[in-house]
Amino acid sequence: MDKVQVHDKHFSLFIENKEIEKRISDLALKINNDLKDKNPLFLGILNGSFMFAGELFKNLNIPCGISFLKLASYEGTSSTGKIKRLIGLNEDIKGRTIVILEDIIDTGITIDNIVKQLKGYEPAEIKIATLLYKPEAYNDMYKIDYFCFDIPNDFIVGYGLDYNGYGRNLKHIYKISD
Ligand code: 5GP
Ligand code: MG
Image (cartoon, rainbow, N blue to C red):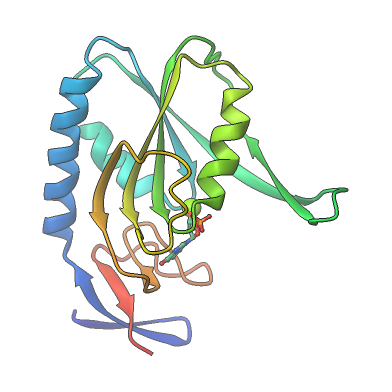
């Protein structure tokens, strides 16, 4: 399938599943080597990261754990309006090596929010791993320790990423074409 329609928009094939899985297994090799003595806890950010997290985790062969978090939006009292609270953390992460798993880093606002909240639990270190990132949009606030693809500033769907709640089930990644 070279072209798909998701909700009311058209998308064209951008990265094939085979290539995605190859890059993720290469990344796993690197993480297996870098973090073998660290007993890391991987924290997948829902919903978008679930496929990336699952594929990466299958390829890890070091002692490690995984858990999933979500950013819940609610109306804050600040003048800026919406604040997103991180929910679902049940583990004690104090002193632990954390690896955040994101689907995509665009401007970096979301990852900044997550890192700031996680720091409050005093982990030993926080590393960032993302399937995709957009270097032209990213604010460079934190080093991205691990990524599979750097991509241009176009809207994409598939492999966990959605458009209006649809398209997460697509096995390839597609780029908007209209
Ligand atoms: P940031 O806060 O870094 O600007 O954006 C991060 C979030 O925006 C991602 O977790 C994702 O939910 C959404 N996002 C950014 N770019 C894209 C994209 O190209 N496609 C989709 N589906 N979501 C995106
Ligand atoms: Mg996301």
